View 1 (tube, rainbow, N blue to C red):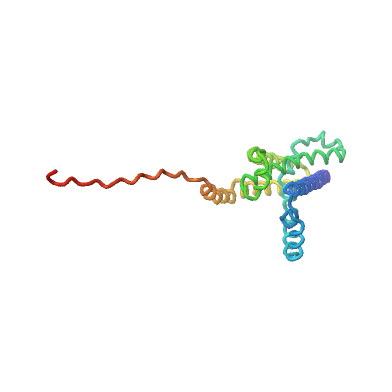
View 2: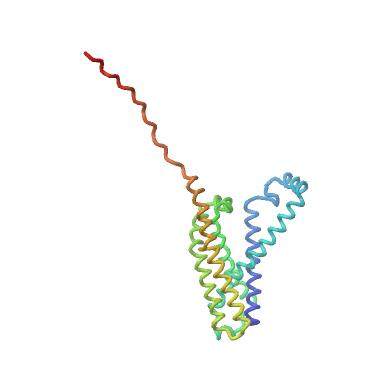
Length: 229
């Protein structure tokens, strides 16, 4: 149980590093300041005039970021139990090597999740998707990769429930399994995802230009033949 907790905390740290560094990199690549504009003078005036409101938004965004890190760590944390065997569990792993491996897994999982969300809500990721032709390819691959990652993670949580001898570890595996299955059902394939697709369909149809039919030529009225002609 202590080993599972230690690896879980290490993976949580790895996921936090990946999410925070990726957010900072996207923030810098978009050439935006904190106020959402590139002009520092305008940003300074906005901070002076609306400082309290911007601070409220920043605190709400930080809470969302913390929730995102925790949820992604739970949703993908079961992956590490799939490669763990009794012989491997007995061998100690160097902390630096363990952290590097977890960072690599966190990078793949985070970008797969973000690409899947970009496919569902492209308007929120429009600045990223419109900067390069790699965006559509990334979204397509993520839509295939993210469900597979979640399925493997759920299998890992179930493995902890089945193979662990500690009751606390089994409870942790059950919590991770139920949380991941509920997330996948409600937000990925269930009613919430169906509502998202339904709401996005009219907007997609309205964006498609309709073909205009050529205007018909006006026909001249026929003259009736006069009797006797």
